[in-house]
Length: 257
Ligand code: NAP
Image (cartoon, rainbow, N blue to C red; front, side, top):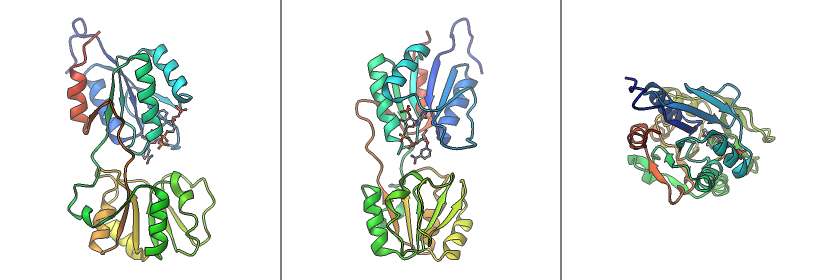
């Protein structure tokens, strides 16, 4: 239900997006009468667009974001970028701090609470994951997204399977197979994929959520070892929420101007 606009003028909320949570949050806020602008990095050629205003492309670093915030003067910024979008998150902290705009970080929980997570090989970064893959796998399946692929290209003797949304930006070894696809994925499809490619190691980020988690169920079903690259640490000094509902609750306490 829309609030009485005479008593509760729309708040201006800037959502740094690129995730399903960001889209869901935009939808709820627009529905309740807030004025929402979502921003996307512009890396994906046909992104799922959120409702409300959408701005595509980077801001030009911290200084660019400061300028944008000064011009737009949002009442609050929600950093709902992916848990691994650490640069955008750091820029949001710096710029909102400088301009004095409230910042909320919305990041879905990782997969660490799953029952099978204790059996995974957890590493701090992609070079470490690549080192494990070099040693433990002969037919690894890389689901890290395209950006970190350069860390894995020394796996020239491995029959590596890669799944990406957009084409890789670095040249890949000839023995590698690239699949372009986008979630959500189903467990039966993931089991078939792992079987067809005789995958013997799965490499993933700790993205969390259900969109891409079927690969973990498939790996468990087929007893394929899993290497997980840990998340970058969350920003310090910023309020953190783990769900769209929590974000809405927190934003609900934001005063109307
Ligand atoms: P990143 O490394 O943290 O950000 C690199 C630069 O991209 C930022 O400095 C900023 O450019 C621009 N940027 C990133 N997110 C933006 C946003 N929401 N709105 C406007 N500009 C943005 O980010 P990334 O890991 O490349 O991710 C890019 C986008 O894809 C993010 O929006 C993220 O939510 C989404 N995504 C990322 C992953 C992942 O695994 N990293 C997975 C799924 C979706 P300027 O410095 O010019 O402002």
